[in-house]
Length: 223
Image (cartoon, rainbow, N blue to C red; front, side):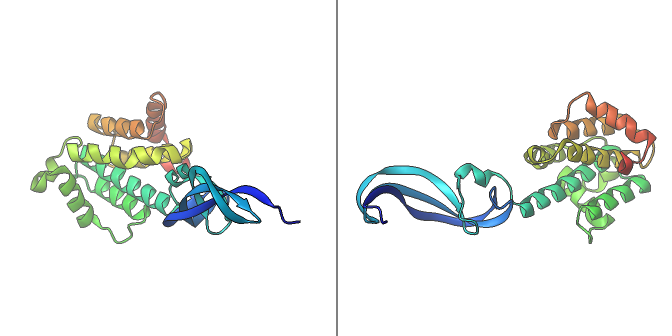
């Protein structure tokens, strides 16, 4: 039987976009909507009653979620954030240890390519490092991170940390450790850079030294 009357919202779409749908468990299109509750007679809205809280509706499953669902990055965005993180950690550790040693340069370039920048060679890595550090032709004399790289670490790693499991955050740190160890033992400035990486990734302080020590005894891929 058709209900004579009832109260239902009437929605209007404000924004269309992509989001990670909690209902579907994947990247989907959404409608961000606002609405107003209406008293309906035989399905027809006749009397407005008041606004309802804005929401996001998935265009695939038609599930409705709070607007906070838009804070979760899409799978595509999360992949890009992870690539940028690996790239920035490689630059930071190369800057901390200096670029004079070929083994360190090759380790950093390998990490950058494995992150997804397949066409990025040594020249591009050094140019990016020079641009961030502002050291120009004196790059090989670098000792520690420049202000630009320190800011970049915070900007790239901190937004990513909440979406990575602890094992994923540890792996990023260990990728940096592998670059630092490519040309020998850790330098003090490399330990400082790795501590900064650990802090930006919200790793426990006591865990960072343990991971760095373990990296000296076994390849980071096997940890």
